[in-house]
Every structure is written in structure tokens, then in C-alpha cells.
Length: 215
Image (cartoon, rainbow, N blue to C red; front, side, top):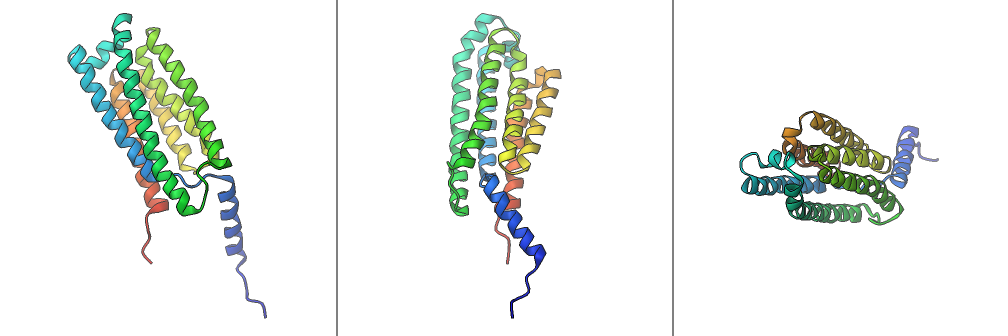
């Protein structure tokens, strides 16, 4: 006599298999936490540098300064941005690779490549656009632009990975729009969007998908 099977359980299993095959589900919440910590450290270093070079309120002094001042600060800002990106990507790679191995998935498989491309195109366009804003005298819109393009990149990539990425992207877009109205608080928006939001998202993802549950 054949054992009785639960149709609902079978449907749930089929759905899980299809989801695994169409979405990259190995993103690690710890990578978000690490990236957020790196962003907060970068904000601290950047704020210290600007205040030491331009006095109290150095960020807004630079944003409202002349072209020569912005050009003088550009190598440091680009270097700081590069360090933040490299460290954040390094943290994300380490934890995501570890989780992909645990899930038995290839990090750089077809899904991983599609996810990377869908992120890279808006981020590259956004980075070049924000650089032009900085050089053309609209420096106060650089951080809002970064948040907006990053949010759009996450929204674009969300179709290849977990649904929570979509909500993180929408949050970044909302912060970017709000930051256009309050450019004087640009560094705070940067710290909140790239720092605290990443940490909160990472902890949520870790507790939801990665944390060991008691038997």
C-alpha cells in the first residue's frame, strides 16, 4: 500500500525548488551588517577630514564652496569612496560565499552573474552622474543622487534575489528624495541609508534566514 502524501506539502516543496532555481537566495545578512559598519566608519573619517580642512560644518562649506576647493578635496573623497566600496564588497563576498557554500550553490553561477550585472549598471551610471554633479557645482545633490541610484540598483536586482532587497531599495529611494530637500543633513542621510539601514536589514535577514532555530 502506497504511503499517503500531503498535496500541500508537495506544492510547498515544488515552490521552494522553483524559487531556488530562479533566485539567488544565498545573500548573507551578515554582509549587510558588515557593509553598514564600513559605511558608518567612512562617514566618521569623511566628517573628520572635512572639519579639519574647512572648519566646523566642513561638509556644507565644501558643498557650497568654489570649484577650486571641490577639486582639491576630490582625490581624498574618491579615495575614501574606493576604500568603502572595496571593504564593503570584501565583507559581502566573504559572508555570501560562505552562505552559498552552505546552501550548495555556486556564488558566480548564472543567477549570481545576473544579480551582479543588474546592480552594476545603475551603480556605474549613478557614480558617473554624481561625479558630474560634484564638478558642475551641484555638490549638495551628490549624496541624494547616491541614495537614489543605489535604491534603483537594488530595486532592479530584487527580481533575482530575496524580496527584502526590494524594500531596502525603496527605503533608499525615499531617503534620497528626502535628502534633496535637506541637503545640509547630507552626511546624516548617508549614515542612515548606507549605514544604519544596512545594519538593520542585515540583522533582519540573519534572524529570518540564517540564525539556527532550536530543535
